[in-house]
Image (tube, rainbow, N blue to C red; front, top):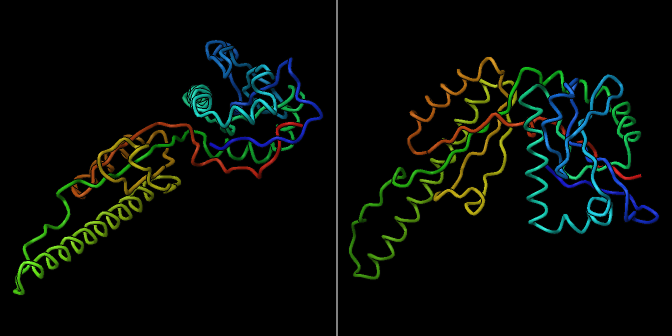
Length: 272
């Protein structure tokens, strides 16, 4: 998810409310939304327009107005809390049907602007919803398994202790490079195989260890759009691939909202 942009406003309002957009669906039961807490801790609500429904929440402009958002998006604590709250709503919507998630911090001035956006983007939104209906996003992460790379053997040769040390170092570096190549090739092969069992696939950049929390390097960070009826078969196939590639440890996660399979719209301002 990316942060929203905003056009200059003559004066950032200190009071009043704006409208935070969580996502767009084809339809939704208002009773279902009544139990879902929005970004500001209040229940979300539907805004209908052009045959679509935007799921929104009212937010105070003192915290979510243009200038306040610009400031708060630099606060990692605020950003994490907002991202979690936003995701919770999108995730709830995804579990009940197809949803087009909104970018994080997409705030409009009022419901009228939201309905205009639904009309302006109707064809794109409706097409995306149709493509996502009956499908789920699943993630597969692959990590290097220690000890599964080639062993370093003591190289033979004379020349004294210094030469022997250099030979060992060269052998270690060669083994490390070979291990990296093997892991990279395995990750590419697994991704290609999984993509063949999915409607669509994306290979994201591997996460840094500080973010993944894993003790070894991540070499595969794939996302796969899978037919809901075929999830069990996809999971079983991922297990088979794990057995074929002991040099990697795999994690299957999901289902997720289809963040990886919603085209990022051209940058535009939420604020007028």
